[in-house]
Image (cartoon, rainbow, N blue to C red):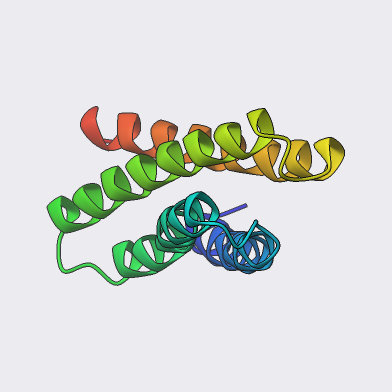
Length: 121
């Protein structure tokens, strides 16, 4: 798979992830605590794809690398909030594990891209 195909596929994958996060956030409790976590996870979970899309349209390699670091950071934050939701048993454990697995995979992908950019590849 060439870089262009990979980029398109990852843009699509992060968009699907954002949709899953939005649906997940709608199912969280309507308590004060639930609203706080809903806002946090919605922001971080949807930001991954938005920043990746911006990275692909960046003006320079430095701009691309910066956006990739933001993707990595947002993915890490999303994993954190998903862990909290899992620990609170606010969702079916099987469902949260599927979303958490995808979040961890996205985190690994953006970490890998970031390392390659740092090495100058």
